[in-house]
Image 1 (cartoon, rainbow, N blue to C red):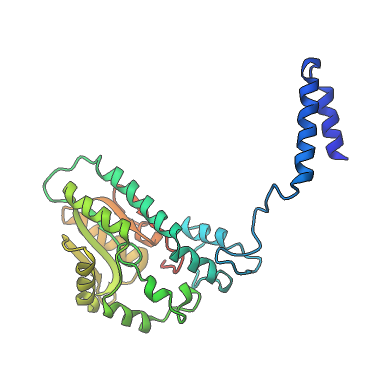
Image 2 (cartoon, rainbow, N blue to C red; image 1 turned 180 degrees about the vertical axis):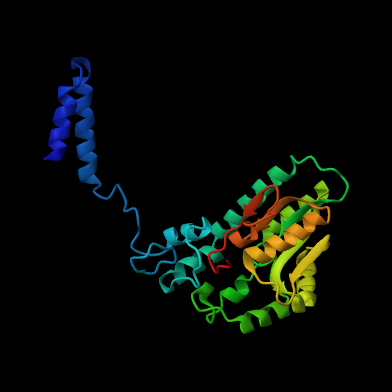
Length: 271
């Protein structure tokens, strides 16, 4: 009934010279709709990106809420989204998303007016920013973050020092060095893992840096810890021209730098 009323209103408000073309348009529209009843697809598919049925939770929306920091203080990936997150992290889209962030960061960096005094620095986080822990998170015992975090197992992985580089970040790192920026790695990893981290970074291509800052005993975590360390950098005369991390806690707080860049990470949250 409503469709007929709409057609009637269109016809009644259409100039005479265009009446014929309007009728033709309506006829073609109706014919197409009958021939292709599914031409307008469902906004939300019945299966996740990995091809598996999931609950009423929209996992893409959940990931978007994570990346935009609208969803906070979550402790693990919803069970219903394990396959979706795994498919995203192991697929092309995650790589493309990281590459885009790195490309935009370089466009920004190459336009900077550097002083040449060695005090212009770029701050990188490590986990899921420059090194990827995907080989660990893809394990059945971790399930891309859908199983509660096990610090003992993760630290054992860190000691292995076999995490691969995130390609886009490694490429950006090399370009920033050529521009004359100094690199600072600022990570929440504890100092007891310094040797493993140095070994891992150098093995995959991060061969030089101005500082590698790791967390000491009792230094806290998240925004408070990272803000404190960035403040110490600036008090030491350094200028933070860029700051990149996978967690919002890498980028929020004080002394965040001239500009921040977030790479995606829907597998865990650090506040």
